[in-house]
Amino acid sequence: MYIYGVNPVVEAFKVPQALKEVFIAKKRILKLKEIIELAEKNSIPVKIVDEAFIEKISQGVHQGVVAKIKPKETITLDDALNIASHKNEPAFFLILDLIEDPQNFGSICRVADAAGVHAIIYQERRSAGLVPSAWKASAGALWHVNLVQVNNIKYAIRALKEHNIKIYGAEAKAEKLYWKSDFTQPMALVVGSEGKGIRQTVLSLCDEVVKIPMKGKVNSLNVSVATSLLAFEVLRQRSKIID
Image 1: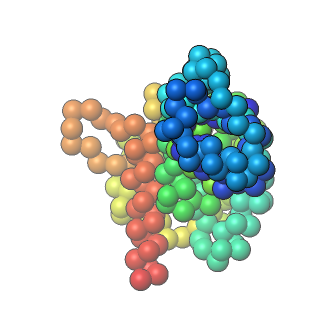
Image 2 (image 1 turned 90 degrees about the horizontal axis):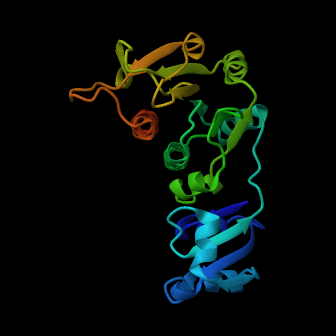
């Protein structure tokens, strides 16, 4: 498994034994001095290579650095439930209904890390998953978010409901505005793919469906942007209670 880009690689140094090897482009040694020093400090092998080698591995905006990493471990749904319990916080999960664009997947992980989401739940099939471009889009946040990979998110939703987790769906055609919902209780937020939204079979399992009001001519936001608005409303409501 390889990741590329400055931020994802720098963040990897914060995770014990995550990095196996770092590759630096010859022409960018001076600009990547920080990464080289971190590698030396952590006894990670560094190889100076032609930029063509890095381009072949990364197939994206690599900034002159690629790293070989150990696979990120996912957690179970039970593990995710325990995280909120151990932190003495009401549960907050994101459920991704077939997000197939790696850029969106990575950006959502970045939002989740910033907003204090306890875990992201996604389906193994027909989801972007942990591909290199998702790591790049996350700016390294993928190292710090808890991921639950399941065979079927509908089963996962039912399991969460058995633990009194309220399920919210984000849907453009919903009647209720998202800021009028109570996000202070244990909850999971379902977001769907940008093209099709949440599948009807998944939407039917949601306890409440909310929307972001739109006044422009384009009737939807990018899914990662929409997730950001919703996630930070959760954080706002919960911070208000703490204050």
